[in-house]
Length: 413
Image: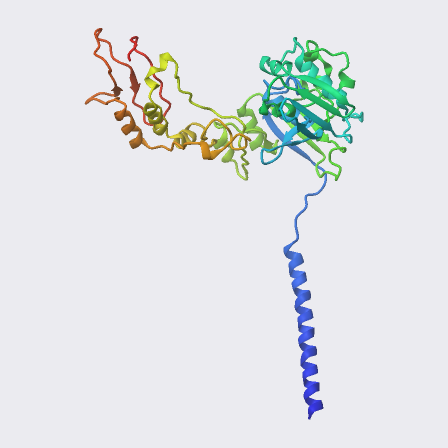
């Protein structure tokens, strides 16, 4: 009897074990199918459309031209760059240090970088680039020239650069994101001759994409870039990036609707509804590093704003959410304070939020003495009697928009 019972248990355990094995195998098959991902086939050209055409494919001359800035960012690298979270990280520099007094920045450069033509990148390239920015005849922004002329740049080794500031200035590191030029190709060039250099139409950088030689974008209205194999060390899937240039947004939208381009580099607020209406369109949005602000005039001519209550009332009276929705088709983010959230100086704990509160705004204006008289369309405040029959300072009565404070020709206290 005992032998039969043991045999039954052994058979039962064997069946259960086999079932467990089959279940595990089935689970592995199902899991493998769930984890399957689609990988794009290698090759192909991605075509983008953009309004305008390049002027100078040169990081020292690109500031006034949005098209140039877009392309230069793909061709050149700076000592530093911004990552996807807005933090400053090394690029051509391997690392950097700041002296205790904040006056000396020392950059240790990468030694594994080559230019698109195969030449090695060194500290000489950095020294050459910054010397052009310091030249009295530099044809770019005057503010940019003044910034670089205020500092001293020294080569402290084949792969080391020191920048000495006259006083601590934390935002200076942003200036090192500007692309570096190859000294070996521009040797003998001066700041004056730089805009006319053939280099600007056949640039050589260290960035992720290379400009194919022999291109004429004025004639062909396009520019073709290929991946830099030294940059994409793990390989790349795309064969080329092609930018096609259009004279205006109407022509750009027509090309997009016809399928001649696969993407639009930048969609303006006015064009956004038309682009979004195209079948199969996907919109990608990213915050831009600039903002628009209404600045109070606190000089003598703006004496109507001398009290904090009036300034607070104007802030509370501005419906910024509606302003964003109606003027830029929602392509904006209300900002508190002068610093972007991605800035190292941004501290929300120090900011006072001014949401749209028209009742609060009205109460503050009443408290400050700005009254809306019966039948009047504008608020008035008179601190002393008028002897000339002139109206006092006035604040136009507006519901949501920026407020202008025009004097009426009389200085009121």
